[in-house]
Image (cartoon, rainbow, N blue to C red; front, side, top):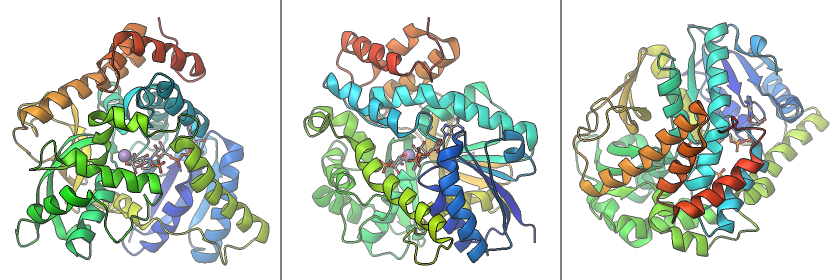
Length: 441
Ligand code: NAD
Ligand code: G6P
Ligand code: MN
């Protein structure tokens, strides 16, 4: 049986150890010959890599391991790139979140002006990795979950139309795990869903068990009372702020009680509430730096110090096993049904055929085939038209180095109240992003 070679791009990510542990757990499904870590921050990656090397030696010595900042070494002789880079790291996420809040506007990693600023940083980083992969391993596939996925996906569609890149988000997976728990099912895989939207901007409208029984009414009932809050806590999204987000889905769902919403819609429907409940001096970036980042890097340092991973509290990110499902779909032509971010091409009949939409796809060795989700209702269509225009304008602004288009993008975002506020936020964001954005004219 072929064993696969994988490069993790963004090797210094807080998610790398959890994903490597998850890959080890699933070796029977996806045998691995080699794991390489690639990052452009040698020092940061060295901590994660030092720990992963010891861990792999102890738990899977048959896997060759290497960490590098050299693209040629990183991307030669591989089958998959798993990409989770964060251009500008947490220092810039913090700015994305805090600058809009100064103007009373949502400050969020992927939604509103923060997501736009992050998009302007990410596009170049992700395209660079696609290019390295194609240069050194032309047959490889890139499984991308670097954010903001909506903007990154549009950039790859427009600027690298023939690349073998699959864009995926774990939010629907996380929510479906909660749905399974609400229903008392053992796994989200017992459900078959119909869903449409953009990334971090979508709705479930049909959910059935494998026998075809309709599960939506029971879920709607629960969500209308409790949002997605359930007794089984999400492991990936465990902090109190995430619990608040799951609870808020109750208010999001009322807008269209027949469907179930993605949690991120709260930033668009309840901007005023979210801003009022945000602390402009301590945002999610601060929470993650003090929480996940501190924990992961602390554990990695301990492993290096002790020269053993025995007793480490680093744990498997089982939730990330969707990445194995995706790799297997490509490697073994499994035709698994998965939600991916793909070019619409008629999946949503009354929507821009060039939009990057999030819909169920059948994934095989030639990539994803989107399923037809049909016509979308007027409310969702209106919202999605506005949001997809924002995302397309950001990519055009990046490509054409156009200040005008970026200002239009911010002005069009439902989270921003006026063109003047958009301009003030844009000018502040541009100032702090000089090192990362293309120069705008
Ligand atoms: P992190 O800052 O801990 O890790 C990102 C790593 O990327 C850093 O080590 C950084 O040095 C590296 N990096 C930055 N620019 C690079 C470049 N141009 N080339 C190579 N490496 C580069 O971030 P994190 O919190 O672990 O998140 C990683 C990414 O995964 C983010 O983009 C995050 O938004 C994304 N994410 C996506 C999903 C999803 O559903 N799609 C879920 C979770 C996380
Ligand atoms: C979800 C989303 C990701 C996002 C993450 C943020 O998983 O799907 O796209 O990056 O949440 O989580 P964090 O814990 O970093 O705020
Ligand atoms: Mn996501």
